[in-house]
Image (cartoon, rainbow, N blue to C red; front, side, top):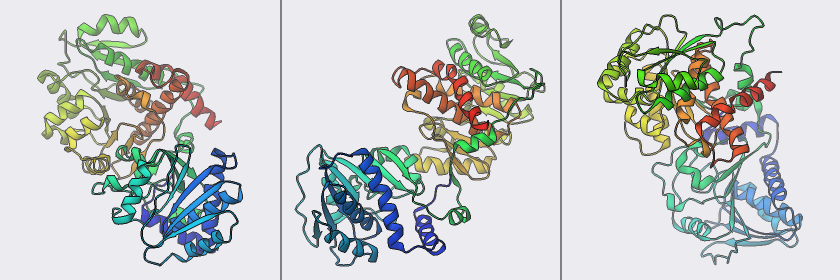
Length: 507
């Protein structure tokens, strides 16, 4: 699914109006009906108090139309229309007149000072001040209104985007003047801001509403931002041949573990095996041998000459994929071994955890990373590689530049994991939950991606499908076990159900 910029949303509206064809006020009515229907689904009992704060533009027109529809459904509405410059968008003005003619609707037009209402905890505030067209932070009276809304105990619902929030970059925004919604009803397509960690406190729950925007117009629009969909996973997932055997399903190498960190090797190895690889070899120091062979009898073990750390790079010619990093530590001998893998392996490598930290410590080595390799940093590891970032928006853009310049994939882990590709695209993953913020979760992802890569998936496919399955397994685990009780092993245990769910999509 494409993620558009604020400017592109306006273009898509115009394209819909021209191509359908449909009058702009009728498109507004359609969008408002979708919003009103969702509100009525959530608050069906007549008599609920709604307070609508409407701006002078298109978003305000939506709010006025929604107020009319809620009133007609038997709810109690009070609408504040801000017309301080005595200039309304034509469709907003038309909906003002419609609301004026609606029995039992209360409309207060604000042209100077506002006497802010006394809001109760069970009231619903509809934020329709500004939508995607905002180009600068809220200030003056509108900033005060946003602050008063945020100070109330009422449930706040924003139409399209919380007022004051830019669709993309909020680095220089005044966060004190952004409406904090508990629910955002987004019209048509998602906005990039919804997927960035620093904006979660503003957007709350996001519900996408289909308002019938032009499919041809959307198809013609250029973007580098994409939200992964289940249909894409259907296209990526491969069915095994009836004549498949372990020799045709790939042989992967994992370089993982050190004294005291055998668990990282075990988690990544178990995840790789659960993800379908034909054979798996794990290169570990001798101190990890007994626990790994006891825990994972299916894995082949290659033992380093050192008892405690990895010091030797083994020949990778016979392996279809190599994953390096979980629990290996940052010893100088381990770093030397990593450098040897980077220089000698003929193919992409999955790099995680301490492998990334070693690369951050040795920036000159980063040019040796094989093309199409997959790096899977969490935000702190990412910042060590690309430089400290102020927020997720800056981190995404700098990771994207890094992926393009180094010709590799950077998977920035987190809620809505971002996959930055060598071609400059950013793929945002929708699966996963806060319960996965637990030690070892990243080791599991390394195993999954390495396994898929060994099975013949292209690096782009292995990264996207691996991240999706990882998050889906976490979602399935959390649904039965709770987010609080979720641990990394649970993600592995629910991988079979994740594969079954995705495979159902292919039947």
